[in-house]
Image (tube, rainbow, N blue to C red; front, side, top):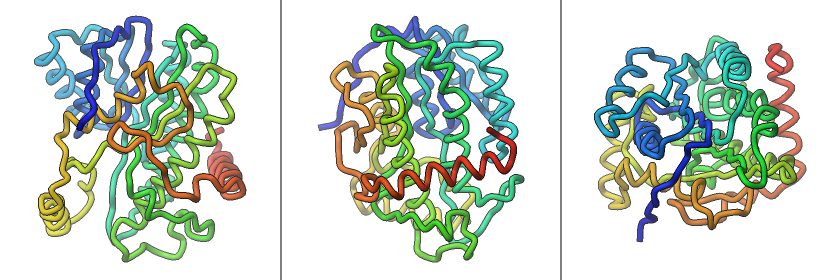
Length: 302
């Protein structure tokens, strides 16, 4: 039975939600705006989509006074750093961070302006950077009475992933196995989220990795038409497709529920589940964290 989301009073919470202009992120933004957050900040790389998002929320809740669109592009690390610095200076408090943005690219190698493979950067490295830059702000903002939440929208594809330190950035070229790179980056996300739970375990901050379910969204917009058409057919045949609204609820339910107080857990459609066993490998975890940090240091981001 699908999980259901109760009404919540978020009037004391400052929230950042990435990937809010499409798919489940758009629905999460609508739902969160309806819970009267103190401030809901929605980063967007496309200004027109950001304005359209505000209109969508307004048509649903008639309240966008506490909703703000800020510019940020996860495919540009400098943009992420600029967003974080502005947020720290102008807002200065943070209670919920939901790293929801992500994308799938099949059988091709696309580089960002930072000369990084786009899925590695958008799905893993940029959210990692954003979290690191905002972590001290969250630590100062939260308390036992008003705990912090850091959530990452994940995928069951993490169970297909591997961590190949010689090919993190597709140095050997793109995989031809469908969803391989995507699964790898989603595994990285789950690993980092679990390690973060250990690091902040005494800071009144809880972390979550969340698979929303099988949902038709715009996540594969960089793929060609025929591949996306094929993937949509498979989704229909599987019979497991969830609505976009239910997918949004599946992500928000563990984060907002008072029942889920354990940190670093992985949730599948709102229910606690086991991720890829690699997540529990401390040697891989430590190395992935350190390698990711070093890539950011080499680019002057931290």
